[in-house]
Length: 135
Image 1 (cartoon, rainbow, N blue to C red):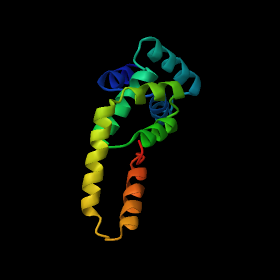
Image 2 (cartoon, rainbow, N blue to C red):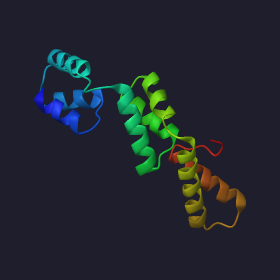
Image 3 (cartoon, rainbow, N blue to C red):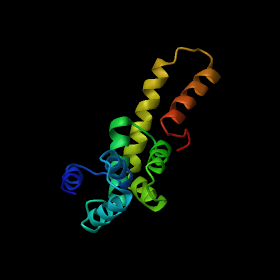
Image 4 (cartoon, rainbow, N blue to C red):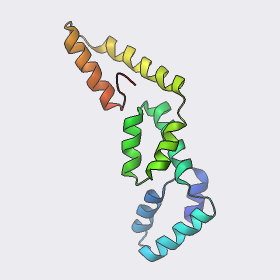
């Protein structure tokens, strides 16, 4: 319990991450449920707070778009309401600025002269990062 509290105090973690860690430590599922409830009651775990921190970090440092962030959070079993809250905390100006910089950088890298091929490559790149052209 103390190790998990210390871990949660250092940074945001979701329930899924903590359960995986407890499985590696060979803690029984019943005991893990009890520990998770105590951590949640003491505000060491908060899905909305985690989703917000995750979304902002992935946007700013990994330059991921909303769709990729949403996909990754679903993979961590974060509730949809918490995901939408976290994504809602992203400022539109910051999001558009990151997207614009990615587009400019990728356009310089694409060497093909055909405009249709250039656009297709740019779209595939943006989709892989979780952005849509019309975002």
